[in-house]
Length: 319
Length: 289
Image (spheres, rainbow over the protein chains, first blue to last red):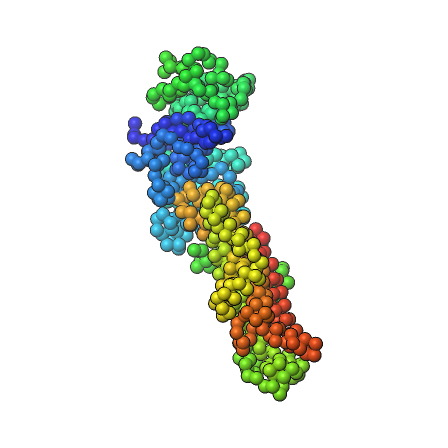
């Protein structure tokens, strides 16, 4: 196996709520390999978005970070703002959920795509502009020449998300972090954007970290999947393994909540609620809702080793 | 920092501005009026055969005539000529001070809003202090202490209107910095200064320019006030305020001496206000076409 592009080690993110530090991300570790799509999946509020943000140290000052994010031999979390500015947008790029609001309304599409090229690659504006044109072709926007001079409000949602992708890809990053890039789009556009991302990844040989709560998206694009629950990374596996042999009780329960078209099924909701962040259990955070919970679950389990790793006492002997 | 060296976007921008001018006739009229006023003051020597300074006591306090189209003042100087030259001083002072106040005030406001915390408190408390005094009192104080000349009058007016720009720039900055495109800009590795100057500033430009045109009108009025109470540019240099004051002694027997410069102030202020309204519509890209 090739060596990872980025290693996340024991990452934790805490916020101060009513004078107490609450761990929104509870010591998670995973690797990002070259040339793969890693999906981080989980329900709202499980910490997947802030995990993605922390890969570029893009969190508000109020957040307390622990652990390491090793990229190119350096720990991103201990870098200074100036060094980070050299990496963000240039070697690691990010695209956001809301294409409607992620583009600056008063700058033209051309200016916004050209800006990172001028800043990071030292291109002149006219060179950057012709490169911007190529990028619009790459993300399959017709009439690229004309689009360059338009403002974001003149484009449709899917078009804007393509522009966001073009901006993200402008400097040929090694890692593209996509935070729910298709949530705000309708289903046909979603499929187009996912296909586009997949093609670009194969073309350019970059790694994509896709944050999503949509298991359908996961099945479509992922090479590997990391499942998060309430700030814990509960299971990581190659995508085929995850869908055929889900191991963690949460993953198993989660898959039963997805309607299927190929066989008769019964939708089973997961009983209970995610505990509020102020009163997370000390042990396994899923234990209060887990059908297999037992005494050992009062102590937090570790993530097992190997490509299909799971964090559960009930699976310790099996893996 | 724009791509306007290429032809396509420029043409569409010009075209939509023209279309806007057609739609917004009142603003177009204001712009025309303001342009004419500026041109008239710039080309004053070619327009009027009289000198703004030469006194001619024999012709004093005359009403309109073919030779003196707006009459003469207490020293027999042609009022129309003096208005043209007075506009030069008034426009120079008014526009310069507004421009400086706009640039400085917006920079301070954006920094305060973007950084927050103690920097915000420090900047805005200083602005509050300046705002706490009535603008005229602040202006009077500065001119009285430093002396009445063009530089100090510009300084006085700048200081009095700077806090208004800071406040107007700060409020939208606070909401803009939470918007996703600012987060996206940070994710692209842009520095704070770049984000403030390139990504936030253009977003508040529309509001600021409208405000600037209104405060430019105000600045011209303040210059007139200061001149009116004798703290303006020293005579015999004509300014609109001094001219109004000079005619004040004869307000009953020769009211026209004060009234025509007063109308000049009115027209400048009115045209600037009309232009401001039009600019607001022109700069907001959502209203463009």
